[in-house]
Length: 503
Length: 100
Image (cartoon, rainbow over all chains, first blue to last red):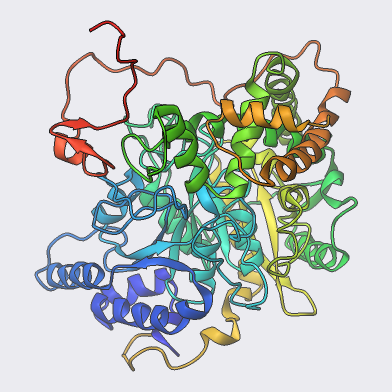
C-alpha cells in the first residue's frame, strides 16, 4: 500500500502512533504531485520548501510532546481563490491577478496553520470560481484523474482532482452554485458545502457574497468532517459568519458512526426529470435502495422552483453580485494594469479586457445588465422574490423529511471542450446544486458508483440549515455499506511513496 | 430578450470592459441566449412575495468604533502597479484646469 492511499484520519492515527512522520507524509504527497501534476494540472503552485519546513516543525513538536492541533502534520491543498500570505501567489486562475501575493491569510488558512496542517499548494479552478469544468482557468484546465480526456468538474476542479488522484488526502474548495459538490461527483470523492455562514469567507476572494461558502473535499466522510471541524466557526472579520452563541459548532466526528434512524429521505421529482442521464439515474437509485435496506423511508417530495427556475435565479443573483465584487479589479491598487491606456477610465476598460477571460466578462456584463436602471426590477428584484420561493420549497420539504437526496450532477464527467462553446449547456451542469446555495442550506456529494465507462457518479444529500452533523452521519450510513473510496483511478496507483511502516 | 450590438456595447461600458473585434457580436449572441433563458422567471407569480437578498436572518453586524491594527502601508502597497511614496500612482483624474 502506498502512503498516499492513507486517508487523512489514517494519517492522523499513524502520526499519533509514531508509525510515520509528517515529513514522510509530506514527501509522499510531493512525490505524487511531481509525478501526476504535469498530467493533471491540479495544482497551480506547490510550496515544497514551505511544506517540508512545516512538516519538520510538527515532527519536532510531536517528539517534544508539545501540544498539537487537530490536523497536525497532515498535508492539505487549498483552492487558489483563498488568500495565502506565505509567498505563494493567489491567482484565482486569472490573468488579472497573475502573480499577486496576498498580504494576509484567509481565515480558513489561518485555521489550517493553527491546527498544524501542512499546506502543500494551491489548486486550479475556473477563473474567479465561475464555471463547472475548470476549463475557464487562465492557466490551463485540470484533467479528470479517471479519464484525462474529461473535465474534473468545477469550479473547484483542482482540489477535487488532487484528492481523487491521491496527491493530498484532503483539500479545501469553495461552492457558490455547486463548485464543491459537482467536481466531487465527477471525480468520485466526498465534497461538502456547509450552511451559509458556517465557515468564514474572510480571505476567500468574493464571487457572489450571499452564496459563496468554503468546504472540504476528502475521499471519506470522516476526512471531510475533520476538515470541516478545523474550519467551522465564527469569525468577526466576516460579518455574515454566524455567531457560535446562536449556532455552536458541534463535534462532527464524535457520533459520525451513529446511523440516523428513523430516516425520512425526500426524493424530489424535479431532480429525476428530463436531462438526467439514465446511467447516472440508475446508479443513484441503487444508492437510495441501500438506504431503504438500512431502514430509511423514501418520500416523494416536490421542489417546484428548484431546477430550471433556480438556474435562472442563480444566473441573475450570482452575476449581479459578481459584477459588484469584481469591480475592484481595475488596475489601480493591485493586479494587472494595462500599459496602453489613454486615461483613467480607459485604464479600467483595458486592464479588465486584457485581464479577464470570456466567462468572467459574460457574467460581469449579465450582472451589470440585470442591475441597470430599467431592468433592476424585472431581473434582480424578480430573482430575489423567486429566491424566497426556493427557500420556502426547502422549508416545506424539511417539515416532512430529514434530508433530500438525488443525483449531484445530471451527467458524469463530460469531455474537455464539449460544452465550452455553449455557456448555457455548461450552466445546466449545476441544475441540482444551485438551489442549495440560494436557500443557504448545506449539501454534500458522495461517491455512489460508476458508469459503465468507469466514470464516477455522485449522490447529493441536502439537509436543513446548520445540520451538518446529521448530514455527515447520514452520508456515513451509506459509506459503511459500500467501498467506493477504496477504488483509485488507475493513474494514481503506482510506487510513489517510500516504503514506510504506516498502516 | 435579444441584445443588440449597441446594447452590448453600453453594458460593456458600464462594466468597464473594453470589447474588441468580433467580441460584441459573440457576446451579444451568448448574452441574448442566457437572457432568454432567465426570462422564464416572468412566468412565475411573485406578486405577494418579498425579495430575499440574504437567506440567513443576520442584520447590522457592527463592532465598537475603535481603531484596530490593519495592513501596514508597505503591505497595502505591495501589489501596486505603480507607486509614489505611500500612494498608488494612477493616471490623471481631474482636468488640468479643475480647481486646486
